[in-house]
Amino acid sequence: MNEWLQGNLYFGFFLALGTYVIGLALQKRFPYTIFNPLLISSVLCVAVLLIFDIDYETFDAGAEHITYFLTPCTVCLAIPMYKQLKVLRKNLAAILLGIGSGCLAAALSIWGMCALLGLDGEIYHSLQPKSVTTAIAMGVAEELGGKTGITVMAVVVTGIFGAVTAKLVCRLFRIKNPVAIGLACGNAAHAIGTSRALEFGEVEGAMSSLAVVAAGIITVVLAPLFAGLIP
Amino acid sequence: MKYLKQLMIIMAVSFAGELLNRLLPLPVPGSVYGLLIMFLCLASGLIKLEQVEEAGTFLIKVMPALFIGPCVSLMTMGGDLAGKLIPILAVCLASTVAVMAVTGLVSQAVLSRKAKKEGKAHE
Image 1 (cartoon, chains in turn purple, yellow):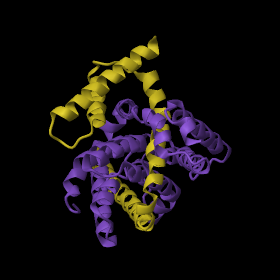
Image 2: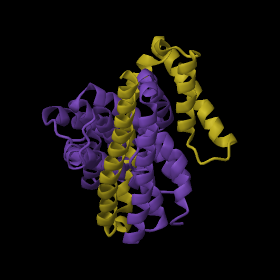
Image 3: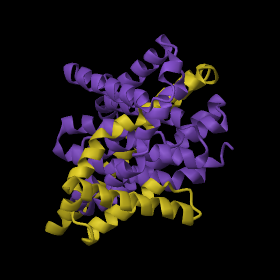
Image 4: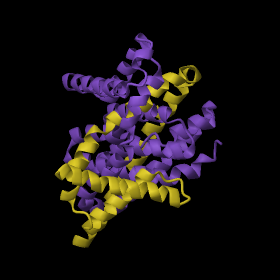
């Protein structure tokens, strides 16, 4: 099968988009956080490659072209942030202090856990940006010398886990203010947390989408400072 | 034509962001420079929201599909990763709870202090 498909760029392109469309349909049918289209698509791609004994390189030759849109997509994250400019100005202190300390908690907890569990530098650098949106996380991991595959997986796992536990964590720590709940969801679980925050309410959703971008930018600054702790 | 023009502006900003990544000796991804440039252009009115909104919203919506390739690349690391999967998951879960709790508690404390101050000013 492999030699048939080698050099056919549209195989990887089609398989990636086709399985993603299946993932979207499944999520519509079963509206649970765990039915994440990216997760479903990746599992289906791996299954197809393994069943038909196709090389990853044959798939990636096409699929990598989709990833080239990473920079333009990240650039566009400025649009929702600009739309929230009023909310941003009104709650500037709470947003900066809340997200800043949240990002610091991320840096310290990831370093502490990695050191405790004896994970090596490459995995540590891959995990450092795992709380922020995938586009920025991948860029940061690349700059630090991590493996972007691990980063993407960790980002998705983090998002799903954060969204599933958001209500419980907020109740446990008595976080009741809607602005605070939104910031917590967006900072801990990026876009997946934002879709959960939108179910809580409009304020929560807006604050969460703002937190996603702000956390990304703060992590860009913080991650390199903590990178040297596990070389 | 509208989409093409919008895409052109987004690509121009992306190009400028990647240029800055080359020029400045900081570990900041070109995409994040681009994000900041786009935000400043929108906030200053240099780029109007209508000039990028449709194409931008489309790109944001399809964004998760960009990460299928990197996600699937995990299959090539299978052996190296197998033993480390549980620790990696443990790091993800613990730090997610930590980030959520700290962000929520700190911002809630700042907000309730601000509310108290404003309450006093009204008296």
